[in-house]
Image (cartoon, rainbow, N blue to C red; front, side, top):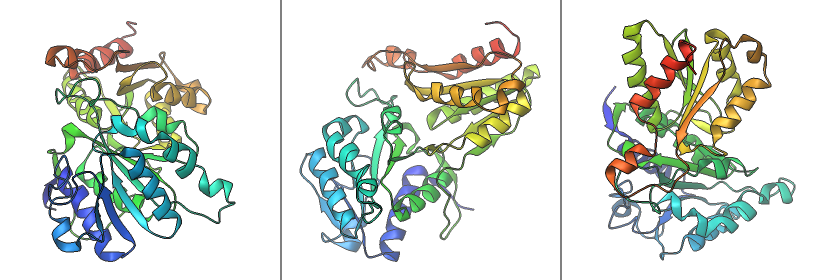
Amino acid sequence: MPEITLRQAIHDAIIEEMRRDSTVFIMGEDIGAYGGAFGVTAGILEEFGTERVWETPISEETIVDSAVGAAMVGMRPVAELMFMDFMGVAMDPLINQAAKARYMFGGKATIPMVLRMPNGSGTGAAAQHSQSLETILMHIPGLKVVAPSTPYDAKGLLLSAIRDPNPVCFLEHKLLYKSKGEVPDGEYTIPLGVADVKREGTDLTIVTSEIMVHKSLSAAEEVIKEGISVEIIDPRTLQPLDVDTITQSVMKTGRLLVVHEAVKTAGWAGEIMASVSESPAWDYLDAPMRRLAGLDVPIPYNRLLERASVPQEEDIIREIRAIVNNQY
């Protein structure tokens, strides 16, 4: 299979769906001639024109409001917010309209829209352009939340998201846009709500997503030299969450570490751990469950402080050793 970047995988998914389904269109700030803030939509305007590539004002509320309305009358908008941080401006149409319309209309209205949002730290973009706010979205019934870590997952999940009759928040970690991976030619989809075992192991389960998948994989390669075998589960879809795959892994390894970039307080690591505690996997635990998350601080501009505010490979290695060796 050819290797492409995650940016290209998302681009390909969008353009393939626009060719397949005339109701699919894209909208957002600078997505046309400029090609999007991170270059994902480059070249799409030239093929589809302004009727299906909507350049919007700098108004996130307008973008999401318009996407909701278009979806309710039969279109399939793929809207882009330049940064996930700006979703705060659009919370009313997102959580009070998009998330609730299908329920409130008894299923007679569907909201087949995708809201793409670049997220995460690591680019030196400071506190208002570097957040991981996925837990806020996970808390809202009616929203689906997707967070791919590889180009293969990004394309397959985005195709499924565009075809889904419900609103899907599609998160794209900024540091992963240039990452490469094998992606097959042609159409394929990945069902929403199905986790993936990124690495098999026997001594410890790590549940993690996006950039932390790659940091956890690197950490696992390091500790295998010490005889510690780590299994890594990538939920891929944070809502709905594939609890079964996670609990089956914990029942095999007997230990659990949850790693995410979002801040620790009320982060989704707590949801994973609660789900495990309520499942049969609880009786299989040989050590206390632990979580490794971002510090409860705004993301600093200073590169050293920014790095220190979110988990790194060395932090994951430290936690792995502590859990496996019963050193809490």
